[in-house]
Length: 48
Image (cartoon, rainbow, N blue to C red; front, side, top):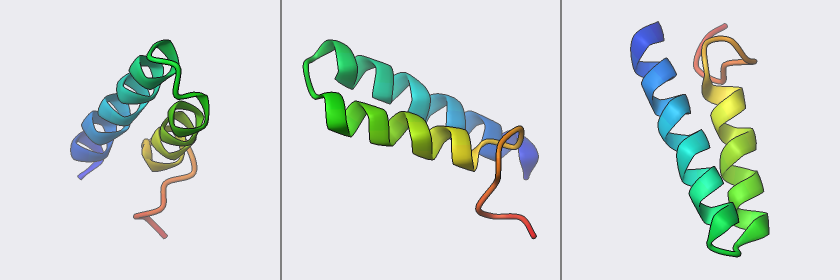
């Protein structure tokens, strides 16, 4: 489960960085924050 969360977090953060470069600052920042929250190293939303 932790591996799946890690992959999901990486996808979200990379998508956020791409959105930042495309000029969509708010959406990029939101994706990066959600990626950090979902990741197993962060405050995961899917664990107790």
